[in-house]
Amino acid sequence: MVRLLTKWDRNRELEIIPSQAPGVRARFPWIPQRAYMESVQVIRRSDGRTWQAAAALEELLKVLPKGRLFSWLFKIPLMRPLVDKLYQWFARNRYRMGCGKHCAVRPANLDYEDG
Image 1 (cartoon, rainbow, N blue to C red):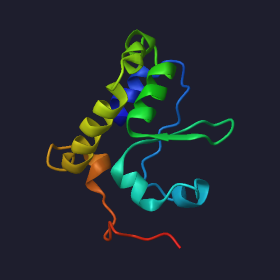
Image 2: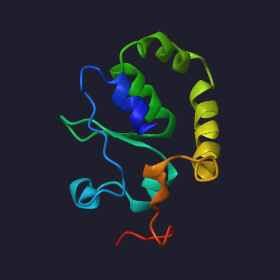
Image 3: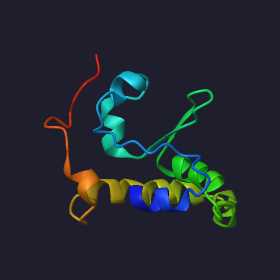
């Protein structure tokens, strides 16, 4: 997915950082560690506003070229809850589906508690 987003982001509006990259936790302390394992995190550079799961996908569609062609789908009633459910299923199964090198590095303790 990282490679695909990078290819689509022709205007270089996105900063794509793997959650395993050094310094991510210090840079975005308001995001619980567990959230990175559960879904993609989209953070607006200007104010730090954060979206995840279906809401993150909706925000990505607003930024990516031709994304607005599909963003209208989120205006359909019940679409966001449906996309959230599909995303949760994907997130639980991504390691089994050959997510790629960026998914191969997982924290030793997925039940990490912030604190």
